[in-house]
Image 1 (spheres, rainbow, N blue to C red):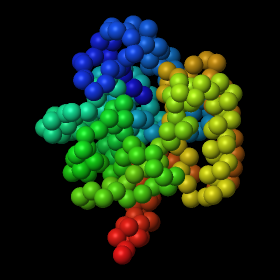
Image 2: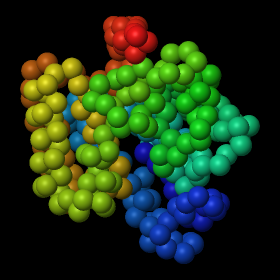
Image 3: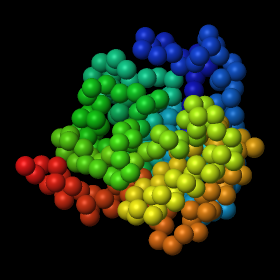
Length: 262
């Protein structure tokens, strides 16, 4: 659940919108997610008995507190996706990056009562020190690496886990880069699940943006695909925090030992 500014600060590394500022069209499209899409997605999750893990632009806590309350009341987890999805980490001095992380921790605690456990860089942006700073601030897992279908330990001071976050079945990638139709996207979700379910011991992460997935013509095949997954034996519908805690307690030490073995 993200917040995009209409006329955000400029970053020399990347423009937030493809059109000149202010990009009213792109802003309005994304704003649909917070005005309409998130509520449609909540209805689907309620019908399926699912809790979400919210990759949160923490500014949503101030701009749309009603969304935060609705998700918190349902027992959803919140992890940080930065402050705004139009403010990038590229090139941030260390002091500013520390401030960004601490602000996320403080804002989520104030708005939800939860202690922040996870991180996904705003618009998938980082510096060379991001993971070390996150570990220093007590963040337990990150979702930025796309490098495995199972959780993995990261080599940082302290304990930190990389949780699987799928690039391939991210709705943004599927619709914008692959040109998937709604029905084709539903088929992609099922195919991803079928293969990982057959292998066992893997994480099926389904990243959904309310401004994309919850458009009226797209939501049906997504609900059908999620229901299909839940209809299989042995499926654990867990939050990111729960998966990280389970892995930390049962597999982390052995995985580190394998990494360090000569």
